[in-house]
Image (cartoon, rainbow, N blue to C red; front, side, top):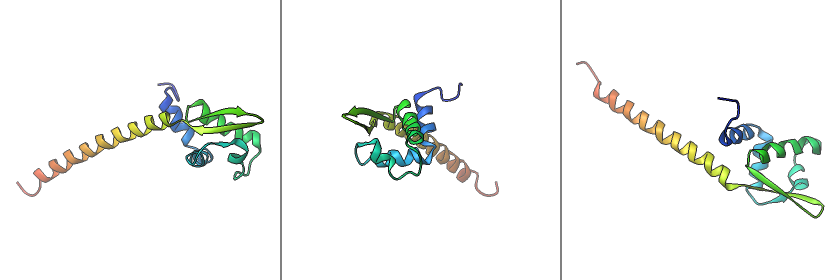
Length: 111
């Protein structure tokens, strides 16, 4: 499988960086201009823009030009895909652990 071959791969890659996770957390409060998003970070705007580019390319955020500012907002659908995948994995592991529990209980003690 090629590296980052699916939208879900790209989303998890984007979220692996603490700066990008902080951006996502801020955008969860609502859309804002890039200048506001960049304020808390100690980095040059071009470096910060690279983080936004990664988030936008994987579909976690979208941006649009409004006058002289670029505004960003979250794209809920991509987060829903990630949440659905994680929930399916959680259910799968819960069932496996339950089967292991049953097996261990049935083989409990000397026989």
